[in-house]
Image (cartoon, rainbow, N blue to C red; front, side, top):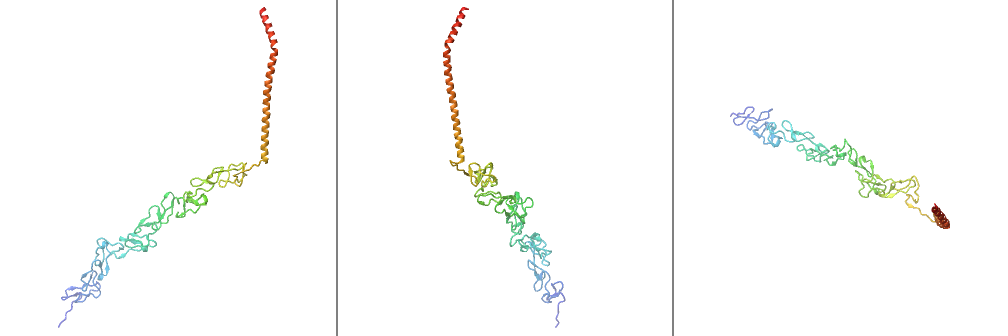
Length: 351
């Protein structure tokens, strides 16, 4: 009895089927076609003549395709001839994952994840713990809007004239901070008691309360004593002091006093006033020197008035008496005037 065996690289009942084994070893079982070292790339099965299922390729179909839209790849080498690689993969057969910090189709996207790019999903770019400073959105690809900055764009810029700040750290490189803020990132409000640009102004609010750190207004209690105006920066006008500048100064030879408490620092109180702030009127007893002086002056005035009245009266009396004396003299001279007139008349008749 003779036994026949198929030749090298052939198998089957008639030895008419070619082995479909890996290139480096084409030998297979002469009856079943089973390859001792695995099937040729793109095939599997007992006789290595069954093509790889959809989505797989390579030796014994052990590799997975990564083509865009889940399209099929070349079952031998895994290349995606039509649409290219799926998001998150690259390479000639789309088997290389995106590098650290990359994502998306062709790994063209750049990750912006906080605190590390290792949190970035290589397919979608989604960041598990939020976006890096200066970015926002589902996959942290959108830059912060104007006026915002920091991680997930959660902070507000405070640049002068509403200028945009650095979207990462909030710095205002050109004009600096807006009134009421300070610090490298302009993120710190002025300390209590100060306000304005570079926090250079002092608050003047009643009861030492703090003012608005931007414009200095004292919303609750109003201005402190000695100050007025919209933001309580204007001192009381000369000669006035105190709450709402409603009090009047009373300083000797000096019209102005301390605009806060009314004290006369360089001189004493004006006449008629006393006290620490010269607001108390002076009491004037009747037996005081000033009172005696006033009484003497009044007496002198009265005496002078009496003398003047006496002189006037004397003049009137003298005038009246003089008039009477004149009348009497005239009456005494009347006979003489009559004789003179008769003599003159006789002379006229003779002539």
